[in-house]
Image (tube, rainbow, N blue to C red; front, side):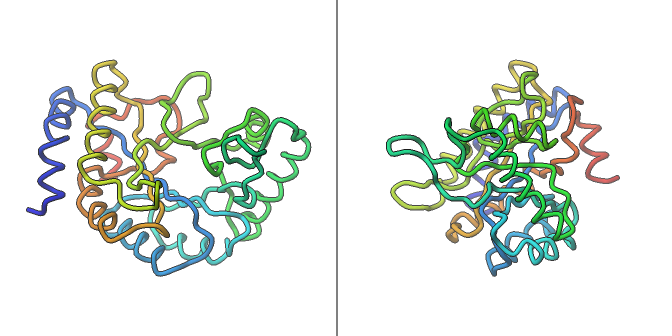
Length: 259
């Protein structure tokens, strides 16, 4: 048994056993950010998706080669493309968090940017359903534009709520970003996963998905090796299977995997 598999068994194994005893299986889903064009790293990512039957949502920046990305994802079972911002350019005034939409932006202008991004995907034969704002900056004006355009939102860290029924966040980032991009570390990642799993179990939030977040262009070998150990345990489901409030029970997830 590899060190990563051993850590997974020790750190989250008991918590997963508690879920199973209660007749539930956590609903993991998988999002990867910052795609612009096919690369060897993307090929490696998609090969993991196929190898472990793990559907993936690839968030792509509209200024990239969306047609080539669509072609690469089209042959991957359960893969989908999401819109990752407009140009992935920081427009934040000095001293404010990075983002693309801010207080002085008019709704009409944000709608125009969003329509332009959506059209890029449609010309590539993709009907996007999800928008991932760069740096997780979901300004209220952007949220309004997404509602008007009929797009769902995905950021980082929040549980699904009745206030934002069309939002589905990621929660578990395999990377650390400061002072430089690198694997977060198995223990740190798994301790967060255990805490979020226990939180859902103890509050009865069995149907709250857990989003795995990756950034294929920034992975070091440690991140890739950890994914090879974690994906067969998490067994992610397609994002589209998580639409709506239905609980993902043990029986439901077996159907999703075998149907």
